[in-house]
Length: 492
Image 1: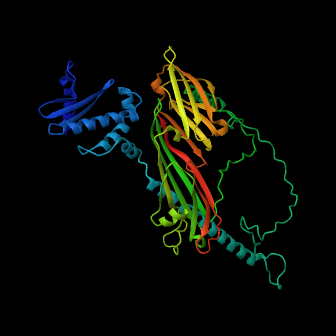
Image 2: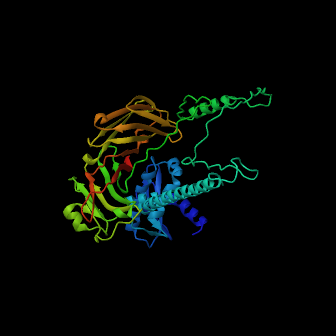
Image 3: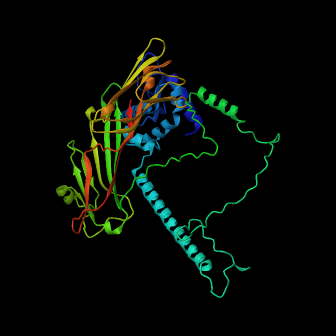
């Protein structure tokens, strides 16, 4: 179908609509228009006359349900700004003129292109890169030791028939950098250094601090755009800044990682629309002598979590004794690879399953704006949530006025977002609130809210209690890393 043909069909649609009648479709000699009004716009589906009208109406309703997923309001400007996301979503519904059998959740997953296999591949690749770097370091150390030994052989032992001084063709052995094991430095002798005359800076010399005005003007420009700029004291010349080193977990030769991902969707007026928890335990063995082991797992959760072991794991052993071991005990687990041995899934329909609940109460203040009150409450008292962020959308160009806030907040003007940050939420800080005013806003502007957090406390009452050898059930030293985080947590 040509572009001119499509433009002609779209141009003819308004002329075919009648104001006095209410229909969901209009037919011409060649095509059928199936449409649905959405506030200020129409959702239009053009099909052939031989198409099934019932299936077309169902497809049209699915198209209409997709738009609120990516647009906050049903106006032309908002739809134009999210045109590419809508096109990608529409492409999952209809392919080559035929409707695909998909639902809204599957469309969201396909558009996000979230792949568990890709994450596993990236984890394996990072492990391989880390092992390659370790081998490179060992090889460099070995070459360094060889150079040091050769240098000691050349300059350390002399023939008794020769004098103690160096000849014209010989040179002292100089150890390489880092060969401090066998190298004893000579005592430092005082040396005289003449004073250097000060050099007068000419007119073309560089002036320190000459660009301070440009920096100040740039900072002022950022502040006008809505960015929060924090100015700290500059380090004095010659002082060393303390590097910030990330905390690295000390892992044993047998290391387990317990990971839980949470997907939640809650209505703004209450009601849990979606709650899904995915858990995974991976095993990493770095020494082949610990390959034949069993992992003891304690499951004290009574909420009906569905557990599933790897196909190579002995299911009867896990069901009877709660131990993760291979079906063939004589075979070891794979070496230097993250192997998923146990996973679980939990779905809930009750709001009591939420780890944290968020209530957002926007109300119009009669001046064209809104007064907003947001509250949080920790629903699971045994959890400790870290790095909690609540992202509140704002209308374009809105500068909120925060009157009360537990924790910290940041206004990101370029993203039209107010970010409420709380470093820790636990039993001692299980509730908090924030109040602010937003001019030129409506209550619908503050949704959807997006919440993110991490935790070292697992949601499910599942943990690794011990690791045993297959031969004699003797305990094995191991380490466990537990992480619980949000994949997608939103209030719509």
